[in-house]
Image 1 (cartoon, rainbow, N blue to C red):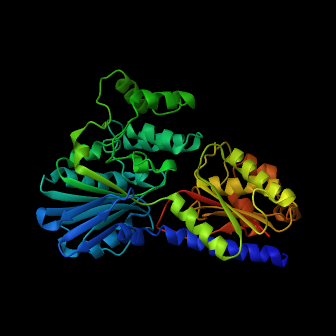
Image 2: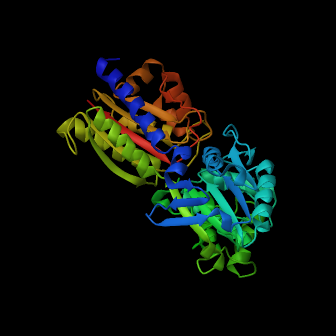
Image 3: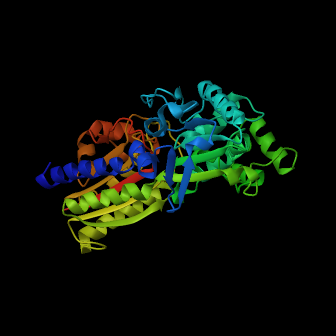
Length: 448
């Protein structure tokens, strides 16, 4: 490996570290919430301020679910300590924190399980017990859709099967969550109805494009604009009507016919008692990456924090930008750093192991093959890409050459959705371990 590629890889690691640090959940809570004596001062993401005298509340409950929820809960315990009456959060396996007042339960992700369902029942009962003079602090982050799971009128096994099918069909997260909201007792604002008339502060780490609060963890405390009809159209769009469990399809049809209630809408009085606060988002992570790249001497450009759609198309687009930098010095000259975020989707047709970030990098490697001093990387900010122990992968202009020398056929690995084993063989997986945050993905192009 030449010295430039070594430098590029070292620079990527520094940029990655800054990206993750910028959206640390513990620090994010303390940036938005502080305590002055018996008063909580909350600064919303839109700049508005909320002042909550703690003496006004009989009890304070803390509930939540998600990959980033444990460090969020640690920060809330730092602020409130023994003022917390009770609490429970649900975290992904291996994502527990050090908590004294708030109970924590590990559960499965990305597919729900019985542990999550039983813990969600406890969350539901806790918020249902809260009265008008009580305060509920909710801590939600990516992964919450799987972890906060209480199926409505369908067996848990059918919910698990439906989730697996939705995750593999190529639907984006908004479409997946639309269906999940309509087969749940807590998603789509239904937990808000249970919490009413308590005061609720809904703290969120955003893992969705555009920071739509109704999509984060499938919006248990947010109004839902989608309908059973929307969910059924998504099922038909991806030809899932004959694949999903019959109980799921039957519930969606019953909803479209008005035989069961809709999810909670914006005119529900429960939302008059809820204040949402977005603590961290993808653009904050990308801004930190940009700042660190500039510090390292790169001309830097953020394309967008809102990339979604097909992973292969996104990879082609980014690969062509890399080639343009090499050929003409556009859109920015070398040394160049191009940054983007968001969350793309892969339609899984093979039986291999991988995730959208690794597949993005593998497809990008084809585009930059042979280009000198060029690197492309993509990582999930939660430290996990798909059902793997890798956050993502890294490729450069020598990747395909090195693969051929090892007898690795790129086309076969792509056809089998087996990007993990491709990059494992090259030593180019990016493994961070659980970062305990989650603001979608970060993609980096570096050129010297």
